[in-house]
Image 1 (cartoon, rainbow, N blue to C red):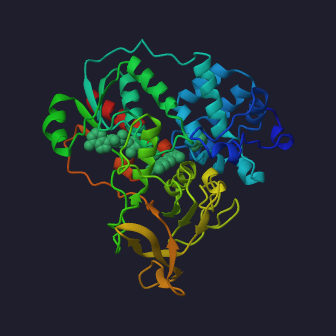
Image 2 (image 1 turned 60 degrees about the horizontal axis):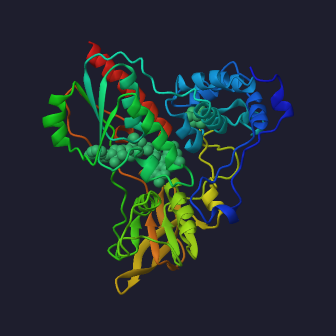
Image 3 (image 1 turned 180 degrees about the vertical axis):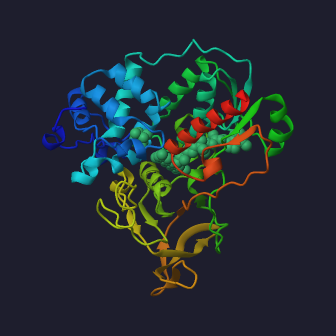
Length: 452
Ligand SMILES: Cc1cc2nc3c(=O)[nH]c(=O)nc-3n(C[C@H](O)[C@H](O)[C@H](O)COP(=O)(O)OP(=O)(O)OC[C@H]3O[C@@H](n4cnc5c(N)ncnc54)[C@H](O)[C@@H]3O)c2cc1C
Ligand code: SF4
């Protein structure tokens, strides 16, 4: 284990974010890093619990106690090998995982100072790239079978990687111009620098995976063509349909889905050009984000960097409980408590229990949104609480409105037995770590199927 009783002597130390006045003007990653000595001290705090709830909570089953111990001893290569034994892309999770493991850490229960697993993971992986512990595998024995993967998000990439390592010849079909899915065209650069994705894709290509971009594969094409050409097909197409708000004024210009803004901004940063009419910009505008989750938070950070005048975020559900403990979902489960992200810290009015009634506009452009404060009353007859209006409707001024209300779970036709669905496409909108775990499990199911 780490250093005995270190958790009693050493406090949790997060690397923290760059100062707001500095980070708000660029799209560089906001998170900083600790120096090597401090990082090892953080790893030393892991107690190697008899029942490691961190391991249980991580969808990948990452062996945090083992790699934290190696990190504390300064055995960086061993730490990386242990981490990589369950996690194919720790450079992604090390940056953007909500760290389910840390919420389940026994130290979180003890004094709300869990081991900094996520940051340790990123540090181990960056050291492994720097020291060249990560090199393309050249020893893969091919089995002569071909598999197609549709969609190059984290689920598709994890499935492709696992199948490739199992000896299959893998072709990935991706409708976008580059790989990564929501890692590239959803999550803002200030959370995940896209060079991190490019570095991984280059490795996957060197290991033999073929990527075909600009290929939008329909269900019909999968059924008629891919299932004939390939021994198996993995569908990892995510949740492409965002939840809409069909209320009066929805047609006004300036009302957009969150991903329209986020994906365009990431493409602009990648060098793509858009005409003035196409460009969605918050510059000089009052921005309203509808939806209180993480996608909404990413819109807030993006609006700030584009130079907005103000941002308001509204949510129809009640304000979550504050503090580390969630009575409805106690440790070691992930708490559904109030989350304040780096983007919220940059400035934002947050309101809960707000229903949206109508988009208001002038000359075809949105100028504000009529909203109504509401309450949720118990409704035992139906089982779900009932929404009741409270007070008078009011208008929130906004020249840019972003809809961040989640995504619809996709439906799939009945596919033949050699087609497998994984990631968000199978389970609905979730997390990168869950998408990766689903991709790996699906690849193993494909292997079992093709080995029968
Ligand atoms: C704005 C935003 C921020 C997020 N932030 C985080 C975060 O910080 N941490 C976290 O853990 N999770 C986050 N998530 C959730 C996470 O990004 C997703 O759960 C995860 O990316 C799902 O992976 P996936 O591979 O299943 O799908 P996706 O990432 O959606 O990838 C699907 C891929 O399939 C491609 N595709 C779709 N249809 C076709 C087709 N017909 N033919 C070919 N290709 C196709 C798409 O272009 C895409 O590349 C965020 C989500 C959003 C929207
Ligand atoms: S992938 Fe996420 S949940 Fe798993 S160990 Fe890393 S930070 Fe924790």
